[in-house]
Image (cartoon, rainbow, N blue to C red):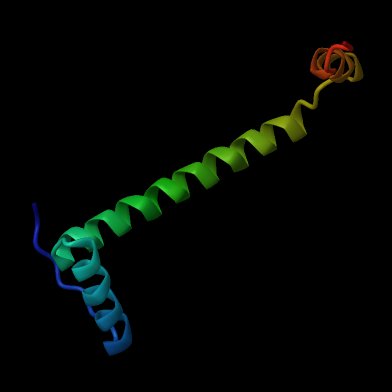
Length: 77
């Protein structure tokens, strides 16, 4: 692992320290996990954006949509 220096304002530092105590981890572990979570969320947003752009470039045909709608209908009892 590498050591870095991060500057936090007092309020954020107090909140970070409190969260670390509640989670029973040290501050570095809390910050590492927060960064991992943030990077995962960015990755998911980027994948969703690429998927949306792909559908805009290549939309489903009416026939495809109708076929899936027929499949989605609950069977009658």
